[in-house]
Length: 135
Image 1 (tube, helix red, strand yellow):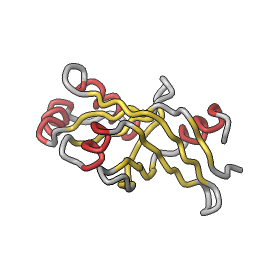
Image 2 (image 1 turned 60 degrees about the horizontal axis):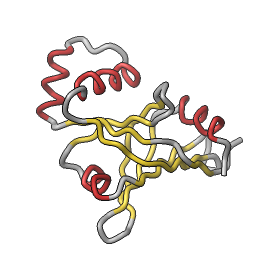
Image 3 (image 1 turned 45 degrees about the vertical axis):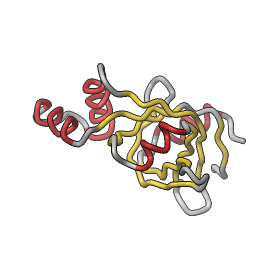
């Protein structure tokens, strides 16, 4: 196991990862994702209502995030519990996500409309345990 502060620092400076959720039959379902570590210490990921990862997390909120380091021998796996942010407040949460990973959007009304059309919500994952060889 890795100290959680060290794990959060590693997560803070990277944004690409592989999210693992649990399928109905117990096997892992893997998704390439773009994430950021928010100031509240939780990993945030934009997802859609219709994706397998969203359905899996509604059934079983356990999630793991694999993040690659500088080479193939350095990586981190963060394990935690997922919450889905949807309904009231999701638009502002998605804007916050966009600002953190991409910066300011040139047209927030256009962005909001695209998020509604895509049925987007925000996934928020706690960082409860972490492991992997860090240098």
